[in-house]
Length: 391
Image (cartoon, rainbow, N blue to C red; front, side):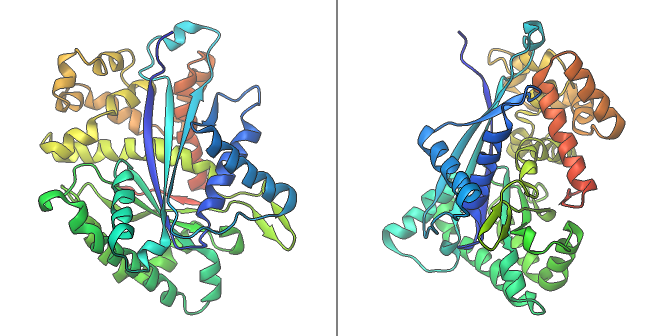
């Protein structure tokens, strides 16, 4: 049997201690375990490490059955790997030309204490090594704690300014250790999303309210954070900081009860990780006019994703064939197939519904899954829990 081909997408999650990082990933996985057995489900989510899967599922079941929150961790970092396996079609012909068979989501957790406390020796080394692990991420979430906003009601800028300043300063402290010979990175998280965690505590706040609060109370600090992050990357125009926003809630928390079915935004994490880099990278690469290492990094994989969405069909296989000359010059991907790739990245409205319906009818389950992710993002925008940058 041929080895399953998986396309990896990485996300990095940053948040202070107590901001809900462990609860988020536990609810994400626990909900997937409950939902993936429906007959109409086109994919399943499985933890690549069985022990991690059991821990996350156990945490979720503890919240659901006994209103137990996970034990708070301190200075602990973790990376969770999940395989999103697409259901096999009864007509195997529909699977022959797909450019990859499954997605892998790698979720990196970076301890918030590391942005608030000084370190030296082995602890400082650990911080640098942990950050290096998440450099493959295209998307980073910065969690803004809804409880802390409530605690600072009327004086939210005090919390927001401190959060973003600590974050920026923490990055500056490890910058020299991260950059080799001071050279900025080609591969680095380039989409930084502000996420309101524990959004259930602020039921009257929609994503536009959340965005406006951040901009009105901490605009200078967002600018400073963007400047710090720009110092880590080549081609700063291919960087988005605080242009995308999302509301997240793992459950509805009440005294002695946790309603795990009442989640907000968790169903968007996988679509954001899978689809947002694709559409953003295509736009950025087009603006670069085919120059430099960053351009090549951005278009690497664009052909595969466009092929999976139906943008260039069976040609995606050729683009991912290591013996094909096209792969040796990734710039040719957009040069020769740019129009089709851009069309795949711009699917929306009726065209997106038609593409999804066509994929379902033809049992092209990978294409149906990815167009379904795009539909989820559109629904998130309509429901005012997600804002996607136009840049």
